[in-house]
Image (spheres, rainbow, N blue to C red):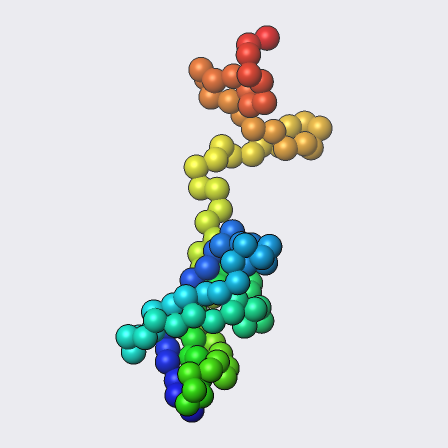
Amino acid sequence: MRYAHFYLKLSPDELLEYYQGHKKYVRVSTYEGYSLQFRAEHLRQWVKAYGINGEFRISFGDNNKFAGLTLYRDLGSQHSSKSAVNTPKNKQNPQGKSSVSAGPNQRPRGFKTSI
């Protein structure tokens, strides 16, 4: 049995192409210098909301046939989901509903023209 190691990062949009059948194979370059291709279905168990982001070990037999795939370092936990940083602050109005206050020279949000 032989092994090779590689890093793979696929976004949810990229994974959708495989799920919809537009693509069937994933091609990777390994740390050992190989260029490998394997069926995308082998990645299914590691798909998360952020996609796939990690380092894998692929094993193959003497005839170079796929034998297995193992995730040995999941980098998805390092995935930073940024919240909206530059959005206006929400304020509570007297009715308890959240509203966004407009600046002195701005129209209230949601209106395209002045009233």
